[in-house]
Image (tube, rainbow, N blue to C red):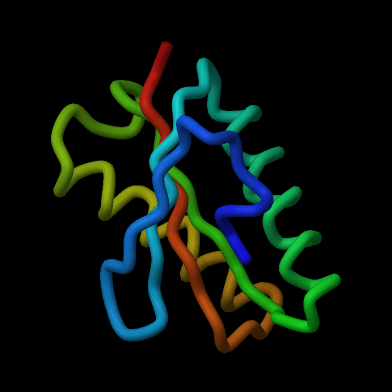
Length: 95
């Protein structure tokens, strides 16, 4: 379902039991936030309530671990605010 909402050059990978990463090229944090909202909406239309976190290289980190941690922090902050149980992670690579 995620792949159908992304561009052909974007990558989706499973990183945990119910956690996925989306790797895409975007230039700014607000673009990553907009993509996360778009994906949440697309998944909601499929009756899957999902929360996304995101991180942008190099603004949020310069290696995989720091990017993962930044995205994970955003994800869980949003989960707490929204009360979501399902969670996904979105990573972006700066242009």
